[in-house]
Figure 1 (cartoon, rainbow, N blue to C red):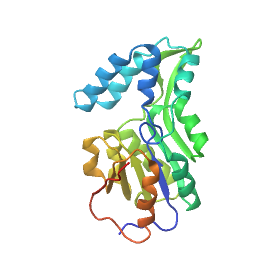
Figure 2: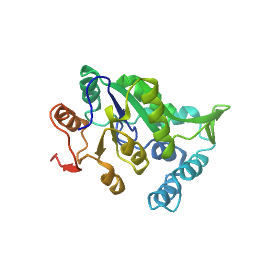
Figure 3: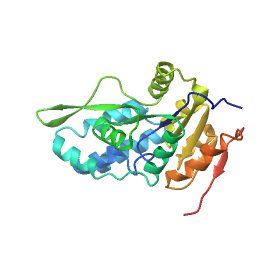
Figure 4: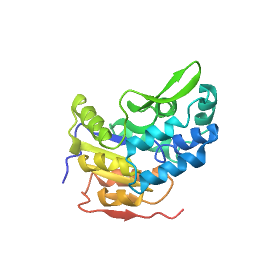
Length: 230
């Protein structure tokens, strides 16, 4: 059984996990390039394009979008149902909270502050003269880099990886799932299921609460599907 006592942390993805949308899709819609972005996303999902290159190509299509329009688009994004209740629950149980996202700071910072997330790591879009340049500032938070960020967060906070729970939905969360003590796949892409201890099929993060409660009493030694009817 993994050790979930003492110091512990819960790490969330953002897109389609803490929020009920994909940030890049909403920005693409605002820029009028959603079909082109979806085509690139599909290539990445089928393995024809790696995550980092897919992100670079999609962000390039956002060049010229005003920051005001971009902020307006992301500010309309809804939280995933149950997000507020889940964060309140984990904080009441003493979990440190983190969000490691391949999404963007213009959304992640707002969502993180709204929910009271302790640590927020995401990609920053370069802005010049009030418009997106189509480039990302600094290292890209995707795939393997998510795992590196996870390991650094645990080290800095004196938390062992096996004391952490991770919640996510995408293939780029697999590297973190492999390192964490317990992995919850939330309405996941098919490839992520094999890395999960629990799979939740419901768009309500409150469904995570009983799973966390069960960790006080038992350890799930193999993946199981938690299919909760709407």
